[in-house]
Image 1 (tube, rainbow, N blue to C red):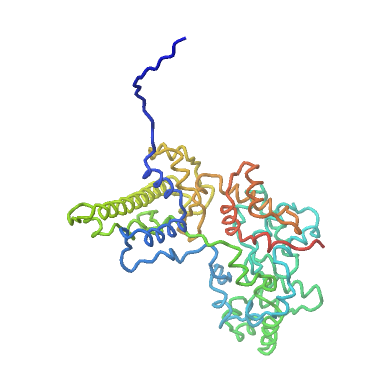
Image 2 (cartoon, rainbow, N blue to C red; image 1 turned 90 degrees about the vertical axis):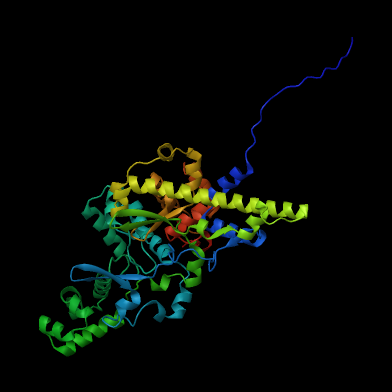
Length: 470
């Protein structure tokens, strides 16, 4: 047997992905916080990249989903006038000397549960006939002050209820401890507390009449008008007003409200990537921060790399070219990210204009990533990377996930609420466990996305939700 060797040439093609394309794809998927951190890192490591004068990358926007001031809604003259708690309690109407800042610190120490946990523990005590799932949902829509927030029309549609059916559930919530919880405005909150005091034999008939018949005069502190209208003496009115101030609280959930450091630790800050703004010309789109305009390749380094200012040292020339190439690749990725987000947002604004104008989910049109990709002539994977973990600020000021426009965000949030409402109080789910369970249910989420949804829904982390079984 003879062995022989032959030499032959073959031609074949292999596909290599351009490193700049890989970098651009990574930048497209970055959140605002990740991009800010990357820019700071590049500025520190690459002298060929420079920030524009007077720019800072540590803060993006004053708008934060979890930093909104506590608000109190007072029904005056048939309108809902919203102001900060401080504005509403002084000087016109001061109830119980204020609220959160005047609570007994010993009472706060004694309360080792949150308001929602306290309400959940009473679910089994409500009257029969109220769906427990609905009641738990209402509890998740009670804010730290004890007020019921959320769109009642949306709740009616979600649970297929009549207005009467929903009001029955709200009344069940309002029957819980503390008195006044579940109110939708200050007037209702105070009346609920009057109801409770009357049941315990500590009511005040004139105080109730003032709340029901002379609310506008009470808010304006026109005790003389109250006396004339109710045909009582000014001294009687003064005693009734003093009763309202001393016996009632505008913040029924104050004793259960987490301290500031707990609240800050529990809800991740959400910064919008896209701003939808209402103008006379309609809805316009802006990037919350145009990073492409904030950093650039240093002109001197660019001239050196172009050879307009030569340098005899070859190693130095290579060093300059490498850093300029790195800066240009980074800037190209940032520019692509901005263009893609603008294009996506503009198409969303065109398709979902009714929803953006009204905030009514009935106007939210079906939209898929595939349909958007076809319209923009982009790959669907590009759309998916671009909208993942991105947030949009609506004309109303509300910040929602960008993927809410694709029809599945609300379902994810509802699944999260249902999961947490059914967890064991002594062994609540961690964010990792929630992500795994929701993934099994058909909602693939990362842990950080769970944390942000939890922050939007104002749900504490597991360590703060944990309480001992009764």
